[in-house]
Length: 207
Image 1 (cartoon, rainbow, N blue to C red):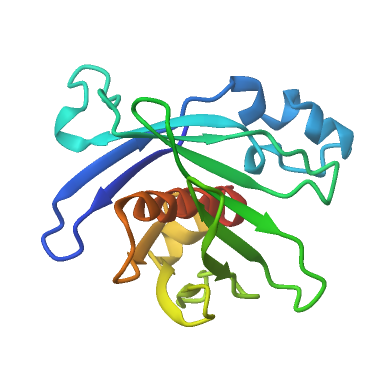
Image 2 (spheres, rainbow, N blue to C red; image 1 turned 90 degrees about the vertical axis):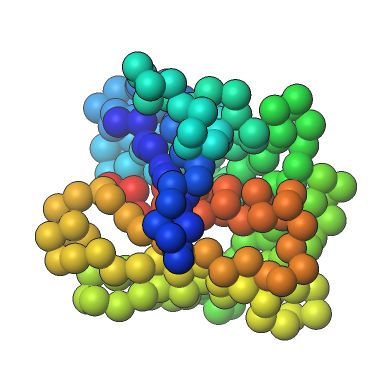
């Protein structure tokens, strides 16, 4: 199915934003995806699928379809086939006029084996770096913390995958994340961090 996300205020639980994936049906279904066939159905192409994802204020959603109207930004992801191990993942964020706000790029690392992602501004300058934990599962009642560092290698924020419940974690694809933004983060980089959450959900928790 096409993923849907809601952004809520952690203090009031008010729903602020919603985002809904727009993607090609074949890329979401392994039996029809050439990437999965390439690996004899061993690869799960749903994790690599391309999509456009408009993000809009929750109050502006279409009451009939539930789809977001008048997006304030659009997250775009190209399909990166796992048939090519060095074809690393990325997403880009655009405003409603189609201007680039920033992007997220996975970087190859020899050691340690845990992941590295760079968050860039509209000028393709690295603003933040995220090192992913080596253990990302939350099935054992734990949290997975993706620490955010500035260019001085100082920890300034985090993205936390929170444990839901045993039933939710094991039997559903419903996930919950908490974002702590750096104090000096610009609105554009906050949008890029939100796109990073979306990318992490596809890469590590899509099932």
